[in-house]
Length: 148
Image (tube, rainbow, N blue to C red; front, side, top):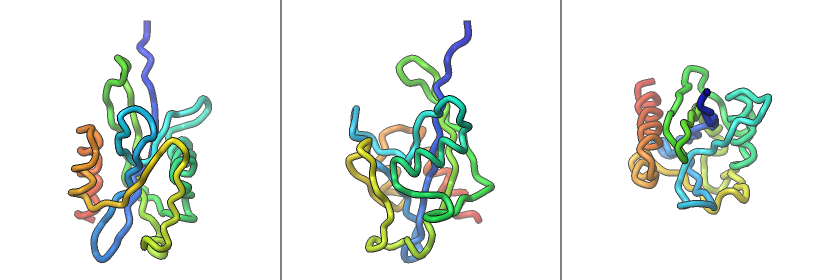
């Protein structure tokens, strides 16, 4: 008997504001209202990349190429247990286009799956998220961006 692994995918989106990196976090409208980058479950027939693009557009209203530019060298898998089932979330990394990186031009449009969103510097983003796996992911993104 094989164990069903739940798969999801998303994109960590960041922007540069006044020489500082800020990360997009969205607060779920369900459960404990945790904060997370846009992500969602892989639908039948989709691969991780297709899911990440679809979920980011559905949840945040952001479209690849129009609103953000993907970093081709960054891809991470985060593994954890949810409701006694293993879950794997694949994350990509993308930068909001510079011309959209001010609050007055903010292109984020939330779906009904979320009740709030914030752009936060790394220390505040890590403080806001409740899951260690998400904290680790954000720190890894920040370290990667700071070294490049």
